[in-house]
Every structure is written in C-alpha cells, then in structure tokens.
Image (tube, rainbow, N blue to C red; front, side, top):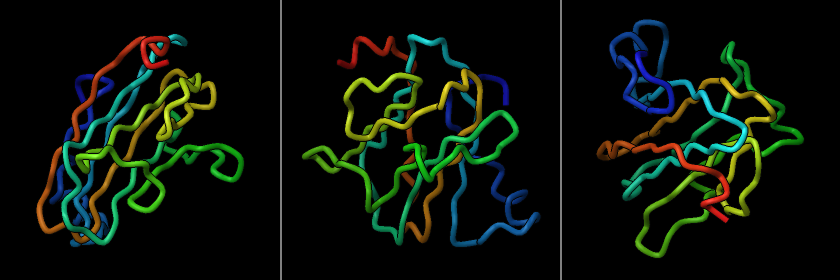
Length: 135
C-alpha cells in the first residue's frame, strides 16, 4: 500500500486464494497518526448485509487487547447517524465519539474492514483530523 490512513479494497482474488471466505469483501490498510490526530472512517450507507466490521491491529497485524480496549466495531455495536451512515473515529485519545476505537498507544498499525454477505459494496472513505476538532 502506497499511502497510510486510507482504506482501499484488498485484492479480492488474492484474499480468496489464501483462504478468504467468498462471501466477504475485504479491505486492509495501515494507519500512521500523530498523538493529536485521529483517523475518521465514514461509510455513507450500510448495505443489506449479514454483518460488517472494522478492527484496529498493531503493526504486525495482531489484534490489540479486545478484552479491555475498544478496538473494533460492527453492524450490531455501531451507533448510526439518522441517515443510516456511520462514522468511526480511530485514535490514541477518546474525543467522546460513540464509535471511537483506540490505537492503544500504537502510532502506526493496521486496519481491517469487511462486508459479510453484502448485497452491494459501499466503499468507506477516510480522512485525518486533529482529535480536538472532534470534541
């Protein structure tokens, strides 16, 4: 991947070749954030799907400690906007956003997003902002 803080679709053929589920559409990327920055992930609408989720991992693609930290969000745990869109905020400091995910002090790490059984694919967009602007 050429640029951090984006969430492009993964190579689906490659994902299937290494054992990925054909009913899942995968995205994978990495983040590189300063202490005072957050990555905002926006999905304009959620298609009819079995599930979707986004997970924050460390540099080595290992899950952060989900037992004690909020590092993932999915179809059932997300707070949606009135128009059906969803916004997720990823960063070191909680700006008070209902869909905030922590980086657990990792300034660099990886992200995984996936649609499971989606009737259509809606691509998420990303942008980096100063965390204080979200409060």
